[in-house]
Length: 211
Image (tube, rainbow, N blue to C red; front, side, top):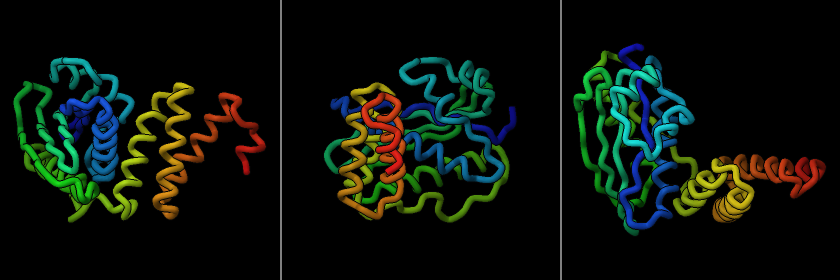
């Protein structure tokens, strides 16, 4: 394994509402996506890191299985318009903490929050494992409508479960995201992928799906 390698483990939902699981998974995925853009940093794919969701595995074992030098783990408590995030960076060779922090913010700009967390993590990795270039910002706004983005996070959560009923729920969320922001490209892409699954379940014809 290389020193500049990391896995972002599934963030735990610390809220009393199980519905907030979608928010944790969405935040997790975005952190993986933005860290993957940093040249010189090797980031484990979502499918690999999410294999440990809900498991209380020793980080040294996880590091050996995923072949990474460090892991990010933590949890999120979302209450109304506020979000509290506890996050830590851990070496996998000895299980020692490199860095930990708690972030308590108003959820007025989710992209700014994602950017703040990603920059913090990237900076701590750089301090611990060597130099690599990072920009002033890692996350860009995908939409100016926070509610539309929340709809995409919910839709993505159900979409990835691949069950028929979940796929139906996902489509409703993506359609609502497009209604809230017709220019939200990611919502349109997800909606198109969902229609492909509809065709796979024979809910619509392939001709309809091409329209």
